[in-house]
Image (tube, rainbow, N blue to C red):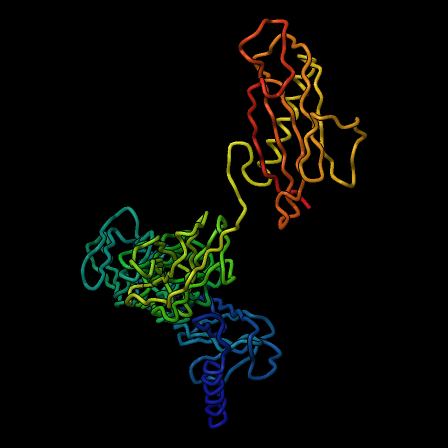
Length: 531
């Protein structure tokens, strides 16, 4: 007797220890116990009948190496079997232990000698079909069967003696009784049988990595639940909700959800739901409050791009406003320091914003500052002085508009001259001064030759004109002047364009060759030579 008590105490002690020491997998740990099943599935049978018990294990942990399966029945000494089944004929409480697993939960079997019994299954989970059977011993047959639930009649029929609940719920738990009416009007009653509908999975519990996260940081949500050992393959899918049931995720087989960046407006009450893929068992967790913390802006700084002390006139100026700290949606604003006039404003989830002034002029030479505000008050930067430097010598005129414009104008003029020369074929003399390093042969000088510095320019000689083309200007003389016109600017070349038109007076075949008798328009263009 003492040995038997010590063995039972040893089993209970190891079971308690392993429950506490079992490793946690996920938010809620599952204790790996052996599972016992009953066949036929009823816990109450008539005396003399047999019931087969089956023991299944999960090979998690064992107190010791078992050669077979161990069976426990009340105060009887544990017995081992090489297989996982055991046939029983006596009433009592049975448990089993498979190799590598903890002892199972107990099952209570009744072998009754009564005339009428109520048969109920050993385990029923929510969503299962619940079947109760009213069975009579002997030859006499039942005429009518009625069932009561918590002493209330819930069914009465003479067509079937079984009570069927297609989809059991936790609310169907309670005390059931069967009342049988014989053909001779004799009434039989069974004892009260307590039936407990088990949870298919526990109520979900929402867990969060941080219930007061900093704005902009990631947050992980986890919807934890526990499946029974008898139904380890039950498939669930999960959903996450906020406030009044607003879904923030789709239904998914994963119990986890990552919010990559959470913002202050995301603060609220969160919950999660779990549901079976088949059977429609749905459960929702208790709400969990998440309060997102915002960091006020500080360290507001205004910078310019380019970062030189001076900005060249005509270039693009970028005013960059940034904050050293601050989260959430920040409103940036740029201002002139003298008038506090607003130049622009941007609101964005960033610690930096830019304002671009496409073409800066002398009027933009002044001091600027910027402000930032994310809901905790406006913070102003120090003022930054912007100096604009203009480039001398840039002239914008009819013929030449800067280096590129002037060069392009001259090229177009030369092309037009050649076109008109082919159209009109005048006897034209084009004199060019190529400078000291490169001169063309020239005829002896006459009194009509004109001197300019150390260059020679001859008057234009015209021949008989051909028919005038409306697209062609009058005869043109293009001459290059010397670079010593501006001694300080050695990279400038000056071109002179002379446009001559015949005088209105005189006969058609008579032309004056003297320059003094012609109307002359002279256009000078200043061109920056590309080095």
